[in-house]
Length: 113
Image (cartoon, rainbow, N blue to C red; front, side, top):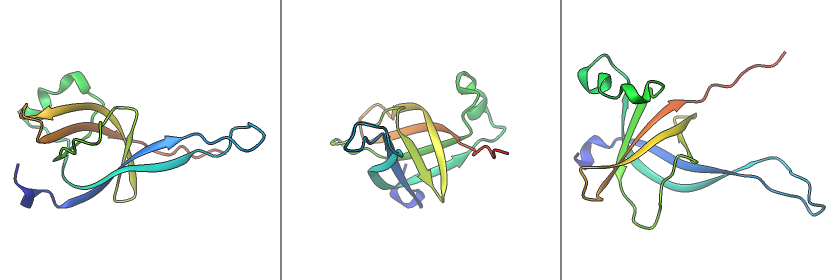
């Protein structure tokens, strides 16, 4: 993976539940854990995506340089181009600790009514 292919900007975000002074839960706040450049790939009908059948709900893949100070977990979300993606899988791409590969699916808002 070359740095030239990492043309998209993403934010790894954590949703934090905040309590008010009286101890009641308030609105959740999104906290940015990491902002970085990433390679972005959507699901296609290729052999590579067919081999990822264990994560059948995964629709996108993000690959970016690993930051040793930040541990990415599936409890985080990704913000990309105004869309939010739920992290399904995090793995060390290449096995050398240089790149992180994330499989995710898009979170769609449900309209109430």
